[in-house]
Image 1 (cartoon, one colour):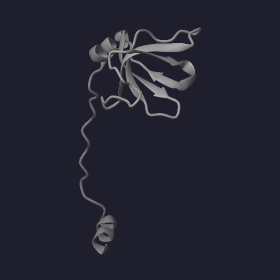
Image 2 (cartoon, helix red, strand yellow):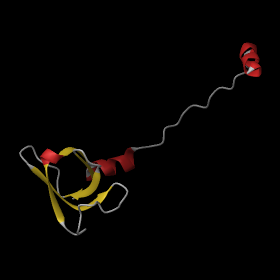
Image 3 (tube, one colour):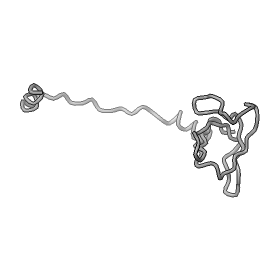
Image 4 (cartoon, one colour):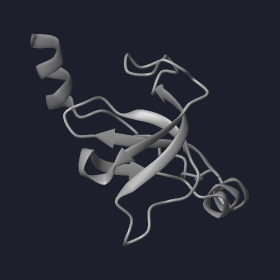
Length: 103
């Protein structure tokens, strides 16, 4: 199960869903559960949160899904980027200071 996938529908706002599996090359639809808006609210077309939804691929523009392997790799391998400390300037340029004072 792929949780918190973002499905971008044609001419509609994106929705978050739980996918049973990513669509294969021969699939014509996507089966999902736990349909909600990106901010967690119930979309207007959802009457039962426990229902299973089948969306035809013709109404889906794009699916953003993070697989379990990728999620584990991101949490383990990503480290904060260490930037070098900036070198302090010795003295500001006099022309720059004059232009700032004249404003």
